[in-house]
Image 1 (cartoon, rainbow, N blue to C red):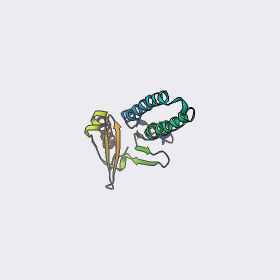
Image 2 (image 1 turned 90 degrees about the vertical axis):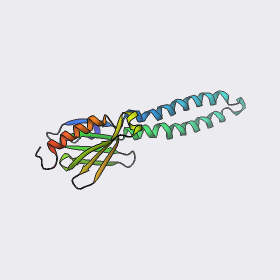
Image 3 (image 1 turned 60 degrees about the vertical axis):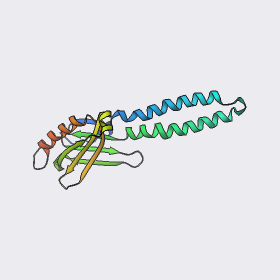
Image 4 (image 1 turned 180 degrees about the vertical axis):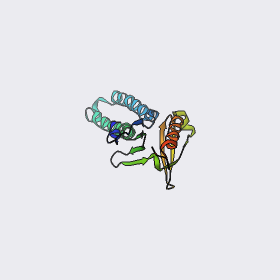
Length: 165
């Protein structure tokens, strides 16, 4: 998470450096366990006369499934960050093509959050930032959402529109 922290202005301090809730890694972890069991079972049950080509074919299929169901979701999780400083909020999402937001606190008019039932079980929520221009930015899957909402509300109150910070 150091990448977003680089390039801070003089006097700017990092307050929160986070990414999506780690609970989002439960699916890839479960998929990895199931695929590991399927690999062992598949290699044990393949007829001897199919070796070695049957083994290689099974391992190729399992490798593809691991790539799609484990590696890509973990890479997506690693590539999603949110950094809050005493002056702005920086976000980054995406693996190949990235989307970045760099929002000064002085441009945020309202901070709110929503928590669905699934997010409540994961201990996360969606942060909603309303800009002075009327645009809305949604940042989904953030952990400790109520605490983060409270913190950002205080920061916007201190450094928000019309404030000198």
